[in-house]
Structure formats: C-alpha cells, structure tokens
Image (cartoon, rainbow, N blue to C red; front, side, top):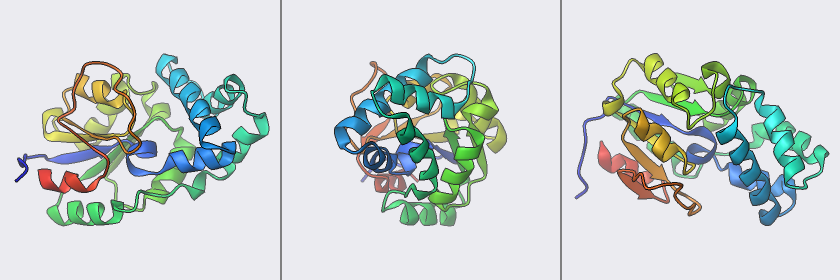
Length: 208
C-alpha cells in the first residue's frame, strides 16, 4: 500500500501535467519531430527569460528558432481552446473534490491563454497563478509562491504536480513536495528528485 500524506491542497502545472499540449503542438507543427523541436526552444526561452515578457511572443520566437513557419505559431494560438485534459483527469478531479482538497494551477501561460486552457481542464480550481500575473516564468519561485498565497496553504502541505522536468526543482525549491507526472518520459534536468514519478495522474489518489 502506498504511503499516504496529509496535504491541505494540490497545485498542478497546467499545460503538461493536466493537459495534453504535446498532441496540439505536434499536430499544428505537422509532425512529432517538429513539435518537439519547437517545444524544446519554447522551454529554453521561458527558463532563460528573466522578468516576464509576453508568452505569445515567446511562442513566435521559439517557432523561428525551430524553423517553424510564423503562420504556424498563430495557428497554435487559434487552436488553443482545443487543448484536452488527460483521460483520467476527470476521475482524479472528482475524487480530490470529494476529499475536500482545494486545487490550484501554476502555469507559464499568459493570462489570456491560461483562461482558455483552464476552461479546457474543466475542474473547480480555487486559485490560478500565471507567469504574467507573477511577473516571472517557472521555474522561478514567483508563480509557485503566488498560487500558495492565493490558496493560503503552507508549501510543505501543498502537493505540486509537475509536468515539465524543470518544475521538479522549481517547486521543490519553495518547499513543495513534488509528484512528477512524466507522461512522455522527459529526462530530468538536475539531481533534484520528486517524491514520486508516474506516467499517469491516477496514482495521485494513493497519496490522499
């Protein structure tokens, strides 16, 4: 039996941990290889950004770096409302809601794209922090700290569900235990270890 923990709240990365953004990026780019290349450049730009600059501009710049036609970047944003949650998310959300666990989001989206993506996730989130509202991109501490402040919970008692590899050291650095939903088998970025790594959201329920 898995060890259960006492968490007062849970915070999710949005675009990778909760939503299948990989499929959308790959479909718009025309292939998995092109989508992964584009996504890789986008991640580099957000990690290196420093103070926030528009997320939409980063998507466009990453496309240019990845030799993706500029029109494709615009197409991605037009199709943003087509993002879909991972298949097991509805059951996980329903169980967490039954347990009385407040749920939050910490995302690198702009406010506008985060609003659209949160609707796609279709769950009752108590707090949402974006890179735009926090002033910095993850894995800087500001987005994690902002969602913790909105939830009013202690980091040690707030489980963070990471999607990207950099969220593992990022959330850990502010004192949050991390569950890495590593759906697509991404490599770790450093030696910081999550409390658990899985390729599904379902095992989260074993922790509550």
